[in-house]
Image 1: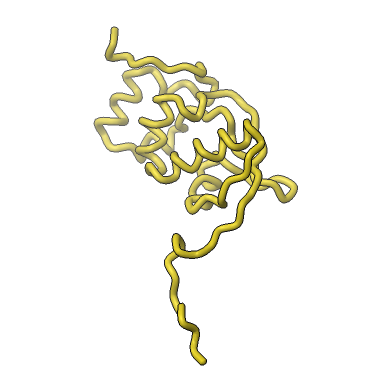
Image 2: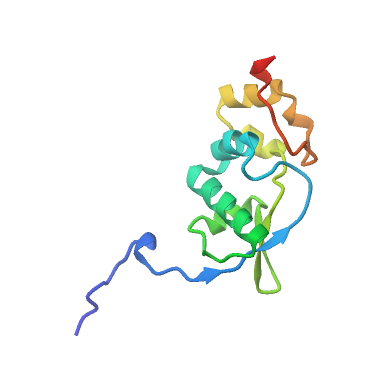
Length: 133
């Protein structure tokens, strides 16, 4: 008998639950507008949504499904596997130079005008819009 489901989309497969752990550091809170604006432009909205969900789950000690964008988040240094556990940053660093170069020109310009190009991951936990000044 042949397999009734020979090819499944990744989103159609059952993903296991994991309990992420906190990976402390300096930077922005995951739900900060900086993360939503600049990290979304870098890794995509789905990856940022999963990052926020995992960071909140790590803080609260809850379980979540394995992120679909796990490979992207690990490659960008936002998550890592430590001792068999998924560690997620609870403070998100500012974009590094290579990541900033991948931003679309208008967003890259906005980022550098906001003074974020020199943050190097030690940014304030609260970001306010520089356009309000």
